[in-house]
Length: 306
Image (cartoon, rainbow, N blue to C red; front, side, top):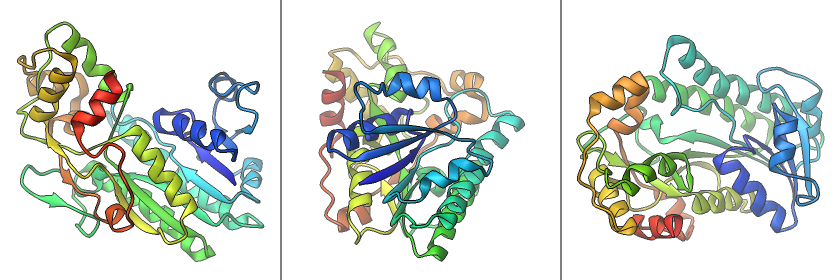
């Protein structure tokens, strides 16, 4: 297959490119920084990968490269976990997803022949936060900033249906791998200073990076998969259990809580990502008989930290 990917140098995207390349697919990596992308995917190793320079919020000649692709995977968006959520930062987070998706759909509309499927990222932030509710794909949206971002993001992706293209929206949970959230938590545990963040009662809906990549590939390949799917493991845990399990896997205690005010001082409004959570279940992925390689958090952490 020929697959176009935005956000391809990111935590999930880079592993997706590796997998697609290994199975012999041709991959177009859409990037704002061609030099950086060439370092990540050197031609002598990634012979099936082509680097396409693009401006994600602007129409342009880059959109012509979508024609003839079998699938488009749109993972691009400014990180929500880095830096304080100033008004300017919130605008960047919002526009990178809304306008970025708008330009991708515009490219698909122009393409001849058109791709068969758009796999578009979203996030479980769609549901808002709760310590008591359980959310699945039928649940309504929340009313905070991240929910607003996700609604706008998904609304732009939905427009691709007007052009006869199959759409799969994956609402990502917290993706676990050596990098991302895990990388930030490993050092305190190594120093015997690990522990739960905030109250410890907040839900932590996670997924192993290899499982989320397998779900993206299934969404590309299987014509029966369509609509919104939660990209989360079937067994979410509370933060205290997650940290306790991480300590067990690393043979370290999990005894030193990180107070909420310390996270708020560091992240500002962005602290909501780690201090509040939501219990999200992947009902539709399971209905499609998707098989999780890492359904339990101990299995996932043992693999990542081994």
